[in-house]
Amino acid sequence: MFGPLPGEGRWEHVLLLDGNLGIGGDPRALLRRATELITGTGSVLVEAHPPGVGLCAGRARVPGGSWFPWARVGVDALHGLAAAARLRVRWHARLGRRRLAELVRQ
Image 1: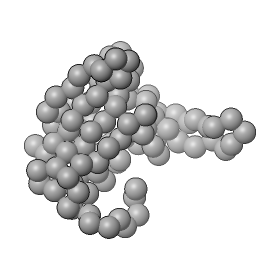
Image 2: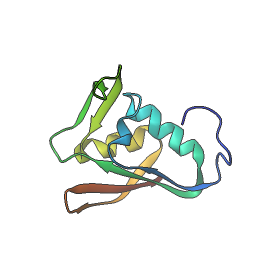
Image 3: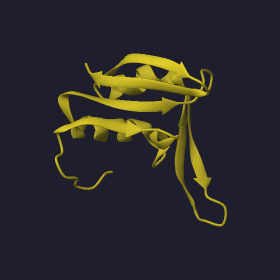
């Protein structure tokens, strides 16, 4: 995600589901990078944790694997994280157990 990617600045959407907003342990940096990938009218679709989680950075690992940086982001932390990446929350909704949000340029 942080290396060169085809079509940077021309993507319509970046999709970060299943906790992938926590990749690398720095959701701010990940959202800033996603902002570089999307068009001016593009969006970043994210899945967040329930309210009350806030932003929790730490480490995680797959059983039998090495530890790596990871973060958890609650819907209550999305507005601040989006603003730091020059994005805003257009909408957020609960879909079953999932909490989804669409972030767009400010």
